[in-house]
Length: 594
Image (cartoon, rainbow, N blue to C red; front, side, top):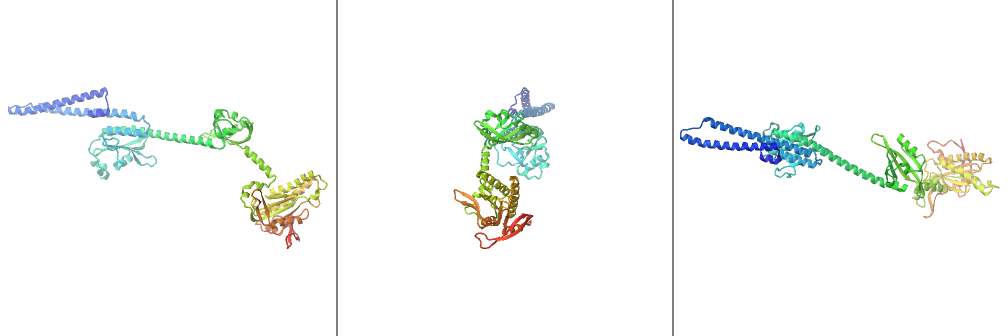
Protein backbone atom coordinates (compact mmCIF):
# COMPACT_ATOMS: atom_id res chain seq x y z
CA UNK A 1 0.00 0.00 0.00
CA UNK A 2 2.86 2.40 0.78
CA UNK A 3 4.43 1.54 -2.61
CA UNK A 4 1.18 2.38 -4.44
CA UNK A 5 0.79 5.62 -2.50
CA UNK A 6 4.29 6.60 -3.52
CA UNK A 7 3.95 5.52 -7.15
CA UNK A 8 0.83 7.66 -7.64
CA UNK A 9 2.36 10.53 -5.66
CA UNK A 10 -0.89 11.29 -3.81
CA UNK A 11 -0.42 13.56 -0.78
CA UNK A 12 -3.86 15.02 -0.07
CA UNK A 13 -5.05 15.44 3.56
CA UNK A 14 -7.62 12.71 2.98
CA UNK A 15 -4.95 10.27 1.86
CA UNK A 16 -2.68 11.31 4.73
CA UNK A 17 -5.53 10.48 7.19
CA UNK A 18 -6.10 7.13 5.49
CA UNK A 19 -2.39 6.37 5.59
CA UNK A 20 -2.31 7.16 9.33
CA UNK A 21 -5.31 4.94 9.97
CA UNK A 22 -3.65 2.16 8.01
CA UNK A 23 -0.49 2.43 10.08
CA UNK A 24 -2.52 2.38 13.31
CA UNK A 25 -4.37 -0.74 12.16
CA UNK A 26 -1.08 -2.42 11.30
CA UNK A 27 0.36 -1.47 14.70
CA UNK A 28 -2.77 -2.78 16.51
CA UNK A 29 -2.61 -6.02 14.52
CA UNK A 30 1.07 -6.37 15.43
CA UNK A 31 0.33 -5.88 19.14
CA UNK A 32 -2.54 -8.32 18.94
CA UNK A 33 -0.28 -10.88 17.24
CA UNK A 34 2.22 -10.48 20.07
CA UNK A 35 -0.54 -10.89 22.73
CA UNK A 36 -1.83 -14.06 21.06
CA UNK A 37 1.72 -15.42 20.85
CA UNK A 38 2.22 -14.69 24.59
CA UNK A 39 -1.08 -16.35 25.47
CA UNK A 40 -0.13 -19.44 23.51
CA UNK A 41 3.10 -19.55 25.48
CA UNK A 42 1.21 -19.10 28.75
CA UNK A 43 -1.21 -21.93 27.89
CA UNK A 44 1.51 -24.53 28.39
CA UNK A 45 2.66 -23.04 31.69
CA UNK A 46 -0.90 -22.79 33.03
CA UNK A 47 -1.63 -26.34 31.91
CA UNK A 48 1.35 -27.64 33.89
CA UNK A 49 -0.05 -25.92 36.92
CA UNK A 50 -3.54 -27.32 36.33
CA UNK A 51 -4.93 -24.02 35.18
CA UNK A 52 -6.34 -22.72 31.88
CA UNK A 53 -7.35 -19.48 30.20
CA UNK A 54 -10.99 -18.57 29.85
CA UNK A 55 -12.13 -20.08 26.52
CA UNK A 56 -13.52 -16.76 25.18
CA UNK A 57 -10.20 -14.94 25.49
CA UNK A 58 -8.43 -16.73 22.65
CA UNK A 59 -11.55 -16.84 20.51
CA UNK A 60 -12.20 -13.14 21.03
CA UNK A 61 -8.60 -12.17 20.30
CA UNK A 62 -8.51 -14.36 17.20
CA UNK A 63 -11.72 -12.74 15.99
CA UNK A 64 -10.23 -9.33 16.64
CA UNK A 65 -7.12 -10.37 14.70
CA UNK A 66 -9.28 -11.45 11.75
CA UNK A 67 -11.31 -8.23 11.90
CA UNK A 68 -8.16 -6.11 11.96
CA UNK A 69 -6.76 -8.00 8.97
CA UNK A 70 -10.06 -7.51 7.08
CA UNK A 71 -10.12 -3.83 7.95
CA UNK A 72 -6.54 -3.50 6.81
CA UNK A 73 -7.31 -5.18 3.48
CA UNK A 74 -10.34 -2.98 2.95
CA UNK A 75 -8.34 0.12 3.75
CA UNK A 76 -5.51 -0.97 1.50
CA UNK A 77 -7.98 -1.56 -1.33
CA UNK A 78 -9.61 1.77 -0.58
CA UNK A 79 -6.29 3.60 -0.61
CA UNK A 80 -5.21 1.78 -3.79
CA UNK A 81 -8.45 2.51 -5.62
CA UNK A 82 -8.49 6.10 -4.49
CA UNK A 83 -4.90 6.52 -5.64
CA UNK A 84 -5.73 4.93 -8.99
CA UNK A 85 -8.74 7.18 -9.49
CA UNK A 86 -6.81 10.30 -8.60
CA UNK A 87 -3.96 9.25 -10.86
CA UNK A 88 -6.48 8.52 -13.62
CA UNK A 89 -8.04 11.98 -13.26
CA UNK A 90 -4.67 13.73 -13.27
CA UNK A 91 -3.16 11.87 -16.21
CA UNK A 92 -6.39 12.01 -18.20
CA UNK A 93 -6.33 15.77 -17.91
CA UNK A 94 -2.70 15.70 -18.99
CA UNK A 95 -3.04 13.54 -22.10
CA UNK A 96 -6.16 15.37 -23.30
CA UNK A 97 -4.11 18.58 -23.48
CA UNK A 98 -1.38 16.98 -25.61
CA UNK A 99 -1.77 17.04 -29.40
CA UNK A 100 1.26 15.01 -30.43
CA UNK A 101 0.12 11.47 -31.26
CA UNK A 102 3.30 9.69 -30.16
CA UNK A 103 3.47 11.67 -26.91
CA UNK A 104 -0.16 10.85 -26.11
CA UNK A 105 0.37 7.15 -26.77
CA UNK A 106 3.58 6.94 -24.70
CA UNK A 107 1.98 8.71 -21.74
CA UNK A 108 -1.11 6.53 -21.98
CA UNK A 109 0.98 3.36 -21.89
CA UNK A 110 2.92 4.52 -18.82
CA UNK A 111 -0.38 5.16 -17.05
CA UNK A 112 -1.84 1.78 -18.00
CA UNK A 113 1.19 -0.10 -16.64
CA UNK A 114 1.11 1.89 -13.38
CA UNK A 115 -2.64 1.52 -12.84
CA UNK A 116 -2.90 -2.19 -13.56
CA UNK A 117 0.50 -3.43 -12.31
CA UNK A 118 0.78 -5.39 -15.58
CA UNK A 119 3.89 -7.20 -16.72
CA UNK A 120 3.43 -6.24 -20.36
CA UNK A 121 1.26 -3.69 -22.14
CA UNK A 122 0.42 -2.58 -25.68
CA UNK A 123 -1.60 0.09 -27.42
CA UNK A 124 -2.79 -1.27 -30.76
CA UNK A 125 -4.55 1.01 -33.25
CA UNK A 126 -6.49 0.47 -36.46
CA UNK A 127 -4.62 1.54 -39.58
CA UNK A 128 -6.90 4.06 -41.31
CA UNK A 129 -5.77 2.97 -44.76
CA UNK A 130 -5.66 -0.83 -44.46
CA UNK A 131 -8.00 -1.49 -41.51
CA UNK A 132 -5.38 -3.75 -39.89
CA UNK A 133 -4.42 -3.59 -36.22
CA UNK A 134 -0.93 -2.12 -35.77
CA UNK A 135 1.21 -1.95 -32.62
CA UNK A 136 1.86 1.70 -31.81
CA UNK A 137 3.28 1.40 -28.26
CA UNK A 138 4.93 -1.72 -26.80
CA UNK A 139 5.98 -2.38 -23.18
CA UNK A 140 7.58 -5.81 -22.79
CA UNK A 141 9.47 -5.27 -19.53
CA UNK A 142 7.83 -3.53 -16.58
CA UNK A 143 11.27 -2.80 -15.06
CA UNK A 144 12.45 -1.26 -18.35
CA UNK A 145 9.44 0.64 -19.75
CA UNK A 146 11.11 1.42 -23.08
CA UNK A 147 12.23 -2.15 -23.80
CA UNK A 148 10.36 -3.83 -26.66
CA UNK A 149 10.78 -6.83 -28.87
CA UNK A 150 10.74 -6.43 -32.61
CA UNK A 151 7.68 -8.69 -32.95
CA UNK A 152 5.28 -8.51 -29.94
CA UNK A 153 3.85 -11.88 -28.95
CA UNK A 154 0.20 -11.47 -27.97
CA UNK A 155 -2.92 -13.54 -28.37
CA UNK A 156 -4.60 -12.75 -31.70
CA UNK A 157 -7.66 -14.57 -30.39
CA UNK A 158 -8.14 -12.00 -27.65
CA UNK A 159 -7.53 -9.08 -30.02
CA UNK A 160 -10.07 -10.37 -32.53
CA UNK A 161 -12.61 -11.04 -29.77
CA UNK A 162 -12.42 -7.49 -28.42
CA UNK A 163 -12.36 -5.94 -31.93
CA UNK A 164 -15.46 -7.92 -32.90
CA UNK A 165 -17.53 -7.57 -29.72
CA UNK A 166 -16.19 -4.11 -28.76
CA UNK A 167 -16.42 -5.35 -25.18
CA UNK A 168 -13.65 -5.57 -22.57
CA UNK A 169 -12.18 -9.01 -21.89
CA UNK A 170 -10.88 -9.92 -18.40
CA UNK A 171 -9.36 -13.34 -17.82
CA UNK A 172 -7.94 -13.80 -14.31
CA UNK A 173 -6.71 -17.28 -15.32
CA UNK A 174 -6.52 -17.59 -19.10
CA UNK A 175 -5.78 -21.33 -18.99
CA UNK A 176 -9.12 -22.04 -17.30
CA UNK A 177 -11.25 -19.40 -19.06
CA UNK A 178 -14.04 -21.07 -21.04
CA UNK A 179 -13.91 -18.34 -23.71
CA UNK A 180 -10.26 -19.11 -24.41
CA UNK A 181 -10.25 -22.89 -24.18
CA UNK A 182 -8.52 -24.81 -26.96
CA UNK A 183 -6.76 -21.68 -28.26
CA UNK A 184 -3.20 -22.53 -29.09
CA UNK A 185 -2.01 -18.93 -28.66
CA UNK A 186 -3.07 -18.91 -25.00
CA UNK A 187 -1.06 -22.04 -24.24
CA UNK A 188 1.94 -21.17 -26.42
CA UNK A 189 2.29 -17.71 -24.87
CA UNK A 190 1.83 -19.07 -21.30
CA UNK A 191 -0.70 -16.38 -20.45
CA UNK A 192 -2.13 -16.20 -16.93
CA UNK A 193 -3.85 -12.84 -16.36
CA UNK A 194 -5.15 -10.89 -19.40
CA UNK A 195 -7.05 -7.62 -19.67
CA UNK A 196 -7.98 -6.08 -23.02
CA UNK A 197 -10.34 -3.13 -23.52
CA UNK A 198 -11.51 -1.44 -26.73
CA UNK A 199 -10.72 2.15 -27.70
CA UNK A 200 -13.97 3.66 -28.96
CA UNK A 201 -14.46 7.17 -30.32
CA UNK A 202 -17.99 8.19 -31.29
CA UNK A 203 -18.92 4.50 -31.71
CA UNK A 204 -15.92 4.00 -34.02
CA UNK A 205 -13.49 1.25 -33.06
CA UNK A 206 -10.00 2.76 -33.24
CA UNK A 207 -7.96 0.13 -31.35
CA UNK A 208 -7.38 -1.69 -28.07
CA UNK A 209 -5.38 -1.42 -24.85
CA UNK A 210 -3.92 -4.82 -23.98
CA UNK A 211 -2.13 -5.84 -20.75
CA UNK A 212 -1.23 -9.28 -19.41
CA UNK A 213 0.86 -11.21 -16.92
CA UNK A 214 2.48 -14.50 -17.85
CA UNK A 215 3.42 -15.52 -14.30
CA UNK A 216 0.53 -14.75 -11.94
CA UNK A 217 -3.17 -15.41 -12.01
CA UNK A 218 -5.74 -13.01 -10.63
CA UNK A 219 -3.58 -9.90 -11.10
CA UNK A 220 -6.47 -8.04 -12.72
CA UNK A 221 -9.88 -7.72 -11.06
CA UNK A 222 -13.10 -5.92 -11.92
CA UNK A 223 -11.57 -2.80 -10.37
CA UNK A 224 -8.72 -2.80 -12.89
CA UNK A 225 -11.16 -3.58 -15.70
CA UNK A 226 -13.45 -0.66 -14.82
CA UNK A 227 -10.47 1.58 -14.27
CA UNK A 228 -8.95 0.69 -17.65
CA UNK A 229 -12.31 1.14 -19.38
CA UNK A 230 -12.63 4.62 -17.92
CA UNK A 231 -9.11 5.40 -18.97
CA UNK A 232 -9.69 3.96 -22.46
CA UNK A 233 -12.65 6.29 -23.01
CA UNK A 234 -10.50 9.31 -22.20
CA UNK A 235 -7.50 7.97 -24.09
CA UNK A 236 -9.63 7.34 -27.20
CA UNK A 237 -10.70 10.98 -27.26
CA UNK A 238 -7.11 12.13 -26.76
CA UNK A 239 -5.83 9.80 -29.48
CA UNK A 240 -8.58 10.86 -31.91
CA UNK A 241 -7.85 14.54 -31.21
CA UNK A 242 -4.14 13.94 -31.69
CA UNK A 243 -4.76 12.21 -35.02
CA UNK A 244 -7.12 15.01 -36.05
CA UNK A 245 -4.47 17.56 -35.13
CA UNK A 246 -1.90 15.57 -37.09
CA UNK A 247 -4.22 15.50 -40.12
CA UNK A 248 -4.76 19.24 -39.82
CA UNK A 249 -1.03 19.81 -39.61
CA UNK A 250 -0.46 17.65 -42.68
CA UNK A 251 -3.25 19.46 -44.52
CA UNK A 252 -1.77 22.82 -43.57
CA UNK A 253 1.62 21.63 -44.81
CA UNK A 254 0.07 20.54 -48.11
CA UNK A 255 -1.79 23.85 -48.42
CA UNK A 256 1.45 25.69 -47.73
CA UNK A 257 3.25 23.63 -50.38
CA UNK A 258 0.46 24.27 -52.87
CA UNK A 259 0.53 27.99 -52.09
CA UNK A 260 4.29 28.09 -52.57
CA UNK A 261 3.89 26.14 -55.80
CA UNK A 262 1.14 28.46 -57.01
CA UNK A 263 3.23 31.49 -56.10
CA UNK A 264 6.12 30.02 -58.08
CA UNK A 265 3.81 29.27 -60.99
CA UNK A 266 2.32 32.75 -60.93
CA UNK A 267 5.80 34.21 -60.76
CA UNK A 268 7.16 32.12 -63.62
CA UNK A 269 4.34 32.22 -66.18
CA UNK A 270 4.85 34.52 -69.13
CA UNK A 271 1.40 36.09 -68.92
CA UNK A 272 0.64 38.81 -66.44
CA UNK A 273 -1.85 37.70 -63.78
CA UNK A 274 -3.87 40.18 -61.75
CA UNK A 275 -6.57 39.00 -59.34
CA UNK A 276 -9.07 41.27 -57.62
CA UNK A 277 -11.67 40.89 -54.90
CA UNK A 278 -15.36 41.72 -55.19
CA UNK A 279 -14.56 45.45 -54.88
CA UNK A 280 -12.05 45.35 -57.79
CA UNK A 281 -9.13 45.78 -55.36
CA UNK A 282 -5.98 44.05 -56.60
CA UNK A 283 -4.94 41.08 -54.45
CA UNK A 284 -2.42 39.30 -56.74
CA UNK A 285 0.12 40.82 -59.12
CA UNK A 286 2.80 38.51 -60.56
CA UNK A 287 6.22 39.25 -62.06
CA UNK A 288 5.01 39.18 -65.66
CA UNK A 289 2.40 41.81 -64.80
CA UNK A 290 5.15 43.90 -63.22
CA UNK A 291 7.19 43.64 -66.42
CA UNK A 292 4.30 44.35 -68.80
CA UNK A 293 2.90 47.30 -66.87
CA UNK A 294 6.26 48.58 -65.55
CA UNK A 295 5.09 48.78 -61.94
CA UNK A 296 5.88 46.71 -58.88
CA UNK A 297 3.51 44.50 -56.91
CA UNK A 298 4.17 46.62 -53.82
CA UNK A 299 2.81 49.65 -55.69
CA UNK A 300 -0.21 47.73 -57.00
CA UNK A 301 -1.60 45.27 -54.44
CA UNK A 302 -4.39 46.94 -52.50
CA UNK A 303 -5.11 49.45 -55.29
CA UNK A 304 -8.23 49.68 -57.45
CA UNK A 305 -7.93 47.86 -60.76
CA UNK A 306 -9.02 50.98 -62.61
CA UNK A 307 -5.94 52.76 -61.28
CA UNK A 308 -3.71 49.89 -62.43
CA UNK A 309 -5.13 49.85 -65.97
CA UNK A 310 -6.33 53.45 -66.33
CA UNK A 311 -6.32 53.94 -70.09
CA UNK A 312 -6.35 50.53 -71.76
CA UNK A 313 -9.99 51.00 -72.71
CA UNK A 314 -12.74 53.40 -71.81
CA UNK A 315 -15.14 50.47 -71.31
CA UNK A 316 -13.09 48.59 -68.69
CA UNK A 317 -15.70 49.22 -66.01
CA UNK A 318 -18.46 47.88 -68.25
CA UNK A 319 -16.45 44.77 -68.99
CA UNK A 320 -15.85 44.15 -65.27
CA UNK A 321 -19.55 44.58 -64.48
CA UNK A 322 -20.47 42.16 -67.28
CA UNK A 323 -18.00 39.52 -66.04
CA UNK A 324 -19.36 39.72 -62.50
CA UNK A 325 -23.03 39.73 -63.46
CA UNK A 326 -22.98 37.15 -66.26
CA UNK A 327 -20.11 35.08 -64.81
CA UNK A 328 -18.68 34.77 -68.31
CA UNK A 329 -15.15 35.62 -69.46
CA UNK A 330 -14.48 38.60 -71.70
CA UNK A 331 -11.61 39.45 -74.04
CA UNK A 332 -10.39 43.03 -74.21
CA UNK A 333 -7.75 44.41 -76.52
CA UNK A 334 -6.25 47.87 -76.48
CA UNK A 335 -3.16 49.97 -76.03
CA UNK A 336 -1.54 51.32 -72.92
CA UNK A 337 1.05 54.05 -72.52
CA UNK A 338 3.83 52.56 -70.41
CA UNK A 339 6.55 55.09 -69.66
CA UNK A 340 7.80 56.26 -73.11
CA UNK A 341 6.23 53.58 -75.31
CA UNK A 342 2.85 52.31 -76.42
CA UNK A 343 2.12 48.69 -75.53
CA UNK A 344 -0.53 46.58 -77.26
CA UNK A 345 -2.37 44.55 -74.60
CA UNK A 346 -4.58 41.49 -74.92
CA UNK A 347 -6.52 41.06 -71.68
CA UNK A 348 -8.83 38.19 -70.69
CA UNK A 349 -11.20 38.81 -67.78
CA UNK A 350 -12.60 35.77 -65.95
CA UNK A 351 -14.82 35.51 -62.85
CA UNK A 352 -13.32 34.16 -59.63
CA UNK A 353 -15.89 31.98 -57.87
CA UNK A 354 -16.06 30.42 -54.41
CA UNK A 355 -17.22 26.90 -53.52
CA UNK A 356 -20.85 28.03 -53.74
CA UNK A 357 -20.31 29.26 -57.32
CA UNK A 358 -20.64 32.91 -56.27
CA UNK A 359 -18.37 35.38 -58.05
CA UNK A 360 -16.01 36.94 -55.51
CA UNK A 361 -13.63 38.76 -57.82
CA UNK A 362 -12.08 38.92 -61.26
CA UNK A 363 -8.91 37.31 -62.66
CA UNK A 364 -7.14 39.30 -65.36
CA UNK A 365 -4.63 37.62 -67.69
CA UNK A 366 -2.46 40.14 -69.52
CA UNK A 367 -0.32 39.53 -72.60
CA UNK A 368 1.95 42.01 -74.32
CA UNK A 369 1.07 41.43 -77.99
CA UNK A 370 3.04 44.36 -79.37
CA UNK A 371 5.59 42.17 -81.13
CA UNK A 372 2.89 39.84 -82.50
CA UNK A 373 0.99 42.77 -83.99
CA UNK A 374 4.19 44.16 -85.52
CA UNK A 375 5.01 40.74 -86.99
CA UNK A 376 1.49 40.39 -88.38
CA UNK A 377 1.79 43.77 -90.06
CA UNK A 378 5.10 42.73 -91.60
CA UNK A 379 3.55 39.47 -92.83
CA UNK A 380 0.69 41.36 -94.44
CA UNK A 381 3.21 43.48 -96.31
CA UNK A 382 5.19 40.38 -97.35
CA UNK A 383 2.03 38.66 -98.59
CA UNK A 384 1.51 41.52 -100.96
CA UNK A 385 4.71 40.43 -102.72
CA UNK A 386 4.78 36.67 -102.10
CA UNK A 387 2.02 34.06 -102.36
CA UNK A 388 0.17 33.92 -99.00
CA UNK A 389 0.43 30.12 -98.93
CA UNK A 390 4.17 30.42 -99.35
CA UNK A 391 4.42 32.74 -96.37
CA UNK A 392 2.06 30.69 -94.19
CA UNK A 393 3.91 27.45 -94.92
CA UNK A 394 7.45 28.81 -94.95
CA UNK A 395 8.65 26.16 -92.44
CA UNK A 396 7.26 23.31 -94.57
CA UNK A 397 8.85 24.73 -97.70
CA UNK A 398 12.18 25.34 -95.98
CA UNK A 399 12.50 21.61 -95.26
CA UNK A 400 12.32 20.75 -98.97
CA UNK A 401 15.75 20.13 -100.41
CA UNK A 402 16.99 21.91 -103.48
CA UNK A 403 15.70 19.84 -106.39
CA UNK A 404 12.18 19.35 -105.03
CA UNK A 405 9.80 16.44 -105.57
CA UNK A 406 7.70 15.19 -108.47
CA UNK A 407 3.90 15.17 -108.22
CA UNK A 408 0.80 15.62 -110.38
CA UNK A 409 -0.52 19.16 -110.52
CA UNK A 410 -2.83 21.29 -112.64
CA UNK A 411 -1.16 24.42 -113.94
CA UNK A 412 -3.00 27.48 -115.24
CA UNK A 413 -1.66 30.48 -117.14
CA UNK A 414 -3.86 33.53 -117.67
CA UNK A 415 -3.25 36.70 -119.62
CA UNK A 416 -5.60 39.25 -118.04
CA UNK A 417 -5.29 41.87 -120.78
CA UNK A 418 -2.89 42.29 -123.69
CA UNK A 419 -0.46 45.18 -123.37
CA UNK A 420 -1.40 46.32 -126.86
CA UNK A 421 -4.84 47.31 -125.52
CA UNK A 422 -3.29 50.10 -123.42
CA UNK A 423 -2.48 52.41 -126.34
CA UNK A 424 -2.70 56.14 -125.74
CA UNK A 425 -3.00 55.60 -121.93
CA UNK A 426 -0.44 57.28 -119.62
CA UNK A 427 1.98 54.78 -117.97
CA UNK A 428 0.68 55.48 -114.45
CA UNK A 429 -2.89 54.73 -115.51
CA UNK A 430 -1.67 51.60 -117.32
CA UNK A 431 -0.21 50.31 -114.06
CA UNK A 432 -3.42 51.04 -112.15
CA UNK A 433 -5.60 49.36 -114.79
CA UNK A 434 -3.30 46.34 -115.02
CA UNK A 435 -3.39 45.91 -111.22
CA UNK A 436 -7.19 46.06 -111.34
CA UNK A 437 -7.34 43.20 -113.87
CA UNK A 438 -4.69 41.23 -111.95
CA UNK A 439 -6.70 41.77 -108.79
CA UNK A 440 -9.73 40.04 -110.34
CA UNK A 441 -7.57 37.04 -111.34
CA UNK A 442 -5.89 36.90 -107.94
CA UNK A 443 -9.23 36.89 -106.09
CA UNK A 444 -10.52 33.99 -108.17
CA UNK A 445 -7.33 31.97 -107.63
CA UNK A 446 -7.48 32.47 -103.86
CA UNK A 447 -11.21 31.62 -103.81
CA UNK A 448 -10.46 28.22 -105.37
CA UNK A 449 -7.43 27.50 -103.13
CA UNK A 450 -4.90 27.96 -105.91
CA UNK A 451 -1.28 28.98 -105.30
CA UNK A 452 0.06 31.89 -107.36
CA UNK A 453 3.52 30.87 -108.51
CA UNK A 454 4.38 34.22 -110.07
CA UNK A 455 3.18 37.38 -111.78
CA UNK A 456 4.69 37.99 -115.21
CA UNK A 457 3.66 41.50 -116.20
CA UNK A 458 0.10 41.05 -117.49
CA UNK A 459 0.08 37.27 -116.84
CA UNK A 460 -0.40 35.05 -113.78
CA UNK A 461 0.77 31.45 -113.22
CA UNK A 462 -1.29 29.41 -110.72
CA UNK A 463 -0.82 25.85 -109.41
CA UNK A 464 -3.22 23.34 -107.86
CA UNK A 465 -2.22 20.27 -105.75
CA UNK A 466 1.22 21.46 -104.64
CA UNK A 467 2.66 20.71 -101.19
CA UNK A 468 1.01 23.94 -100.10
CA UNK A 469 -2.51 23.14 -101.34
CA UNK A 470 -2.93 19.38 -101.75
CA UNK A 471 -6.28 18.37 -103.25
CA UNK A 472 -7.46 15.24 -105.10
CA UNK A 473 -9.76 17.17 -107.51
CA UNK A 474 -7.24 19.80 -108.55
CA UNK A 475 -8.36 19.86 -112.21
CA UNK A 476 -11.92 20.77 -111.17
CA UNK A 477 -10.63 23.61 -108.95
CA UNK A 478 -8.53 25.02 -111.79
CA UNK A 479 -11.40 24.94 -114.31
CA UNK A 480 -13.77 26.46 -111.79
CA UNK A 481 -11.25 29.26 -111.20
CA UNK A 482 -11.07 29.97 -114.94
CA UNK A 483 -14.86 30.21 -115.27
CA UNK A 484 -15.02 32.54 -112.23
CA UNK A 485 -12.38 34.74 -113.89
CA UNK A 486 -14.48 34.98 -117.04
CA UNK A 487 -17.45 36.18 -115.00
CA UNK A 488 -15.25 38.51 -112.95
CA UNK A 489 -13.74 40.13 -116.05
CA UNK A 490 -17.18 40.62 -117.60
CA UNK A 491 -18.32 42.36 -114.42
CA UNK A 492 -15.19 44.52 -114.50
CA UNK A 493 -15.91 45.53 -118.10
CA UNK A 494 -19.31 46.79 -117.05
CA UNK A 495 -17.79 48.65 -114.11
CA UNK A 496 -15.23 50.34 -116.38
CA UNK A 497 -17.82 51.06 -119.07
CA UNK A 498 -16.05 49.15 -121.82
CA UNK A 499 -17.18 46.43 -124.24
CA UNK A 500 -14.10 44.69 -125.57
CA UNK A 501 -14.81 42.46 -128.54
CA UNK A 502 -13.48 39.88 -128.24
CA UNK A 503 -12.73 39.75 -124.49
CA UNK A 504 -9.24 40.63 -123.31
CA UNK A 505 -8.42 37.49 -121.28
CA UNK A 506 -7.17 34.11 -122.42
CA UNK A 507 -6.35 31.03 -120.31
CA UNK A 508 -4.52 27.72 -120.75
CA UNK A 509 -4.85 24.76 -118.32
CA UNK A 510 -2.93 21.46 -118.34
CA UNK A 511 -2.68 18.55 -115.87
CA UNK A 512 0.44 16.41 -115.54
CA UNK A 513 3.58 15.52 -113.58
CA UNK A 514 6.10 18.25 -112.73
CA UNK A 515 8.85 18.93 -110.24
CA UNK A 516 7.95 21.20 -107.30
CA UNK A 517 10.43 22.58 -104.83
CA UNK A 518 13.06 25.15 -104.08
CA UNK A 519 15.32 26.56 -106.76
CA UNK A 520 18.17 28.97 -106.27
CA UNK A 521 21.03 28.92 -103.76
CA UNK A 522 21.54 28.48 -100.03
CA UNK A 523 21.18 32.23 -99.57
CA UNK A 524 18.32 32.96 -102.00
CA UNK A 525 15.57 30.51 -102.89
CA UNK A 526 12.31 30.46 -104.80
CA UNK A 527 9.52 27.87 -104.60
CA UNK A 528 8.27 27.00 -108.08
CA UNK A 529 7.30 24.24 -110.51
CA UNK A 530 9.23 23.18 -113.61
CA UNK A 531 8.79 20.56 -116.33
CA UNK A 532 6.88 19.80 -119.53
CA UNK A 533 3.53 20.17 -117.74
CA UNK A 534 4.28 23.82 -116.99
CA UNK A 535 5.57 24.47 -120.50
CA UNK A 536 2.48 22.96 -122.12
CA UNK A 537 0.12 25.00 -119.94
CA UNK A 538 1.97 28.14 -121.08
CA UNK A 539 1.74 27.07 -124.74
CA UNK A 540 -2.00 26.49 -124.40
CA UNK A 541 -2.46 30.01 -123.06
CA UNK A 542 -0.36 31.44 -125.91
CA UNK A 543 -2.43 29.56 -128.52
CA UNK A 544 -5.79 30.48 -126.99
CA UNK A 545 -7.78 33.19 -128.73
CA UNK A 546 -8.94 36.26 -126.82
CA UNK A 547 -11.80 35.31 -124.49
CA UNK A 548 -11.03 31.58 -124.69
CA UNK A 549 -10.43 29.05 -121.85
CA UNK A 550 -8.44 26.13 -123.28
CA UNK A 551 -7.72 22.89 -121.44
CA UNK A 552 -5.65 19.88 -122.49
CA UNK A 553 -6.82 16.29 -123.04
CA UNK A 554 -5.13 15.33 -119.73
CA UNK A 555 -7.20 17.88 -117.84
CA UNK A 556 -10.39 16.66 -119.54
CA UNK A 557 -9.56 13.09 -118.54
CA UNK A 558 -8.97 14.17 -114.93
CA UNK A 559 -12.37 15.89 -114.86
CA UNK A 560 -14.15 12.82 -116.20
CA UNK A 561 -12.36 10.55 -113.68
CA UNK A 562 -13.73 12.42 -110.66
CA UNK A 563 -15.77 10.16 -108.30
CA UNK A 564 -18.73 12.55 -108.48
CA UNK A 565 -18.45 12.81 -112.25
CA UNK A 566 -17.41 15.85 -114.31
CA UNK A 567 -18.58 19.30 -113.20
CA UNK A 568 -21.51 21.09 -114.85
CA UNK A 569 -19.52 22.41 -117.80
CA UNK A 570 -19.56 22.11 -121.57
CA UNK A 571 -16.41 21.08 -123.44
CA UNK A 572 -16.03 21.87 -127.13
CA UNK A 573 -13.09 20.25 -128.87
CA UNK A 574 -11.06 22.59 -131.08
CA UNK A 575 -8.56 21.80 -133.77
CA UNK A 576 -5.38 20.21 -132.41
CA UNK A 577 -2.41 22.51 -132.13
CA UNK A 578 1.29 22.02 -132.69
CA UNK A 579 3.16 23.54 -129.79
CA UNK A 580 6.79 24.40 -129.66
CA UNK A 581 8.97 21.59 -128.27
CA UNK A 582 6.51 18.77 -129.16
CA UNK A 583 6.45 16.63 -132.30
CA UNK A 584 2.89 15.35 -131.83
CA UNK A 585 -0.19 17.53 -132.00
CA UNK A 586 -2.06 18.37 -128.79
CA UNK A 587 -5.82 17.95 -128.52
CA UNK A 588 -7.50 20.96 -126.89
CA UNK A 589 -10.98 21.72 -125.54
CA UNK A 590 -12.71 25.04 -124.91
CA UNK A 591 -14.63 25.31 -121.62
CA UNK A 592 -18.05 26.93 -121.04
CA UNK A 593 -20.58 26.94 -118.25
CA UNK A 594 -23.23 24.28 -118.85
